[in-house]
Structures are given as C-alpha cells and as structure tokens.
Amino acid sequence: MSSRASIERVLFVLFAIFMMSVPWSVPALVSSFWVSVITEILIWSLFAASVNLLFGYVGLLSFGQALYFGFGMYGVSIGIDQLHLGFWPVFALGIVAAMTMALVSGVFAVRLTWHYFAIITVVFSLIFYFLAVRLKPLTGGDDGINFSMPPTFTFDHSVWSFTDPTFQYFFILLTVSLCFYLMHRVIHSPLGKAFVAIRDNDVRASLIGLNVYLIRLVAFVMAGFLAGVAGALFAFFGRYASAAYMFYQVSGEGVVWAIVGGAGTLFGPIIGTTLFIIIREVVSTHWEHHALIVGVMAILVVILAPRGLVGLWSDRLDRLDKDAAELPSTQPERVPP
Amino acid sequence: MDTLLLLALNGLIWGLIIALIALGLSVIFGLLDIINIAHGDFFMVGTVIAWFTLEATGNFWLGFIAAPLIGFILGALIQRVVIQPVRGVAALSIVATFGLSLILQESVRIIFGPTPRRILAPITSTVPLFGIEYDVYRLFAALLSIAALVGFFLFLQYTKIGTWMRAVRHDRDTAIAMGIPAQRIYILTFGIGFALAAFGGAVAAPIATVDFRGGVDILPFCFMAVIIGGLGNLPGTAAAAVMLAFFEGIIQSVADPTVARIASLALMSAVMLIRPQGLFKGHVR
Image 1: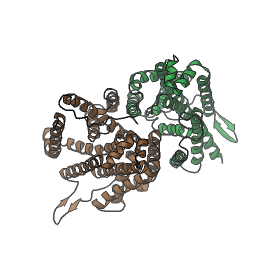
Image 2: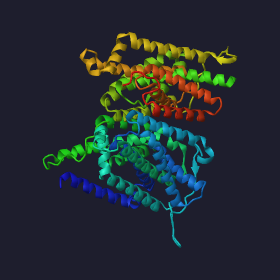
Image 3: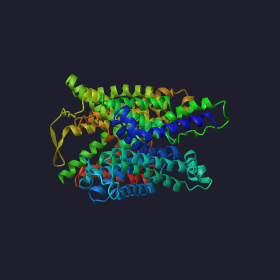
Image 4: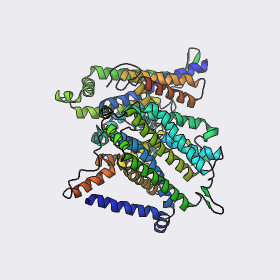
C-alpha cells in the first residue's frame, strides 16, 4: 500500500469519526448553531455531487440542477401541505418527482452537448422556476410554503421526528452517506467506466459499442435522483420550500462548489461546498457583503488550482509518493471537454 | 388593439437594447470561447454608471459616453487579471465569471446601495404614433441602439482592428503567424463586450430600474438570443434578440409577463432541439 492510500484512509476514518460525533462535540467546542450549519453542508454537498456526476464523470455541464432540487423540495412540501401525506410517502414523492422530471427533460437535453447542453438545462429550469412563481396557490411562489413536520417513525409509545435535532442530523447524515456510497459504487462499476469513456471521447466510446445517448440519459436521471434527494432533505430540514431555490443562480452555485472542490472526484464537491458555506456563515455575521469574499475565492481557486482543491491535494500527495511507488495516479487527468 | 401595439413596440425597442448586450456576449463567446456568467452584470454596471453620471454632473447625456468608456476599461482590466489565466478551459471560465458576477453585484451594492432607483428620462414628451401616444425617449433609445449596432458592424468589417478580431476568431494560430497581436485582441474584445453591455445599460436606464440585481434577469435572455441566432453568428444574434423581445411583447398583451417569459423559453427550447445551429444558417463554428 502506498503512503498516499494510507494517508487518505486515516483521514477518511478521522472524518467519519468526526461526523458521527457532531451532535455532541460541536456544541461542546463551538455552539449548537454549527450543528445545523454542518447539516446544511451535508445537504448541499449532495446537490454539488449531482453536478459533479454529470460534469466530472460524463462531461456534461448542467446549469439546471436546481430544477430537480426544486422538484424534490416541492414533492415533499406539497405532499405534506396539500395532500397531508406522512413522512415516507412524501420523501418518495419528492424523489420520484425529481427523477421523472430528469427523465423527461433528459430525453431532450442529452441529445445536445457542451454549450448547448448547459443552456438547454438552464432554459428548462427557468421554465419551471417561472411556473413555480406563477402557480402561487400550489407553490406559494416567492413567499414559499411553510409546513409542520410529520413524524418519521411512530412506534407504540415513542415518536421519532425531525423536531429532535440529533435525530434530524443522523437521518440526514445517513441518507447523504448512502447516496455518496451509491455514487461510489456506480463510478467503480462498468457503467462508471462507460461514463468516463464518454467524457474523455464520446466518438471513440460509441465506436467501441457504447450507446452514448442512453448512458448519458442514465447519468442524467441519476444526477436528478441525487439533486432530488438533496431537495427533499432540504425541505425537511427547513420545513419550507420556495421558488427561489429553483433559480439558475442556485444551479450556478452547485457548479462552482463542485469545480472548486474538484470535479471528477468523489469528495471534491463536499470540500467545495464546505469551504463556501463556512465562509458564508463565518463572514456574514460580521460583514454583510460576504458575497464579495466568495467571488474573490472562486476566482483565486480556479487561477491557482485549476483542478480544484482536491486536485491540489492529490498533486501534493503524488509528490510524496513519487519514489515510493510505480503506481500511476488514481486520479484521472481532467480533460476539458 | 392599442395595448397590443404599445406592448409590441415596447418589445421591439427592448429587443434592440438586448441585441446590443447579446452582441457583446456573442463576441466574447465567439472569440474567447468563454461562457460569461457576469455579462448581465456588465449591463447592470452600465445602468449604475448612468445614474452616477447624472448625479455628479446633472447631465444625462454624458452617461452615454461614460458608460461604454468605463465599461471598456473595466473589461480590459478584467480580461487581463481574471480571464487570461483561465482562457481555453470553459469550465473554469464559468466559475471565474460567476465569481466576477458576485464581485460586481456586491461592489455595486456597497457603492450604490441595495434599493432600486429610477432615472427620469431626459425627454418626457410623447408623440402620436399609429394612433397611440408613444414615449419619445423609447424611440430615441431605439435609434441609439440601431446606431450602435450599425457602428459595431462597420467597425468589425472595415477597420484594421475589426478585421484582426475576425481573423483571430477564425483561426488563431494563423493570425498569430501573420503577426496579429492575439493577446491584445483578446483584451480589446473583452473590453468591447463590456462596453456594448454597459452602453445598453445606459440606454435602458430610464426604461428599466437601476438595481444591483438588474443583470440577473437579462442574462438568460441574452444567452437565448445568442443560441437562437446561432453561435458566432453576430447578425443572427441581433435579429434573434429583437424577435424574442417582440414575441414576448405580443404575448404580454394577452397574458401576464411571467406567462410571456415561459412562452419565449418554450419557444427557445423548441428552436434549440429542432435547429441547434440556430434559426439563421450562417457561419457556424
């Protein structure tokens, strides 16, 4: 085993231990406010991961992932607010709504690539953003919908629900981890290899017999699933849904988080999202113009670390590894599509 | 009938202003291969410059000179500092221009303040036109936009620098081999792109509101014009902008603006799927 793999393994174990201990260690060290910040980071990381699955692994830059986030969010909120369903049915409703929308728009969108793909995805998301603003009785428009949480599990005497912050944290941690694990499995499956083959050269991929259109569509629906789960969790977390989360700037933030963290790596989106949300939370309490710092950071990272923060990190580890192993870098070179 | 005419005219004139902004976007897109997320904010900066010029000098007309001038300088600076290091990698350019967009919006919020303001048009009279009383300033704005569009095409076609810009877009390596300073052309192009958007902003300032978020709604519209017109097809871009805004104006006479926007977005998706090379067959990169 190379020193690099062992360093990463140790870091991963430390990270996992930290995440498991958040509800107790974070209030003790800082304040319980940061538990909810970390919960929010988990949810938005999943959103950035959906951008990353498409861009980092299949080479399609989607600027409309907020649409599927929004469908997950509205599936939950409308399910509770209008249809009076329980926790699990609305969770399913949100995810199914997001995936169905991804399938329907994907059928059209993945026929296009690169600039055209980026723009058709943003156009689709804008259509539904304006619809959500317009259909005020159903969606609440810009004001949004507030709802009260149904319980997650009800046993004879005990009720488990998101009103308990510790339960909420662990439910979200578990769901997000499960999604990342699924993504990890997909990326290392033959399907994941097909994704990368298409990203690197779609003509060659089709010549070795891959159905490029179908594989892109599958990736698009999977990304819709990730964004939909993130949206559903966000609605549960905030007990709130608003059309504002479907606007293209939200999609843009997801793209920035994924690329700054390191597109085409599993953990890149988590790192990018964590960085930007922590900056936002730390600075915004002292200075209202925190967006200025976010803007400068985004520019500095792409100029100084074009392969993202994870790219910077693995370059450093590669240097460490140089004499230890003949192993080629496990990070595939990120080829601009 | 009168409302239809009024809204159609408004749409047409708004389309001419959008054409200016979209042209700036298209030039940057075509030459530097950059998806410029900050382009709407270039427009917004133009409206703000017009507001400050009016405040400082009391003269509205100076804004038409100040906005493109300051826009050009800012654009040239931005190209050199932010865009040059990431040129050629489109994904990075999206992140960089997204950061730029945040910086521009936030800077304007600090300097100008968060509340939207209005500029009174320097000409407030109306003129009878096809049976309705129409705003003279809007007609004047249309004339100015047409003049700027024509001027820009003449510049691109008949001046040395315009020819160089076309040459670098067509074949960068050959252009460099022929001695064209491509690096300087990139800086110039970005400056011109910013200047066009800022000029559009100054022209639109009395029609629209001056607001640090004023560019956010403009951006998707400009991208639609660029795509429908055909990537790299500059006259197509201008025509598509006018058509789209005109179409929205007509829909607005029977439905509210949100529905009109949804209709134009749906039209746009249909065009992209049926004719991804754009409505007008032309120079396709």
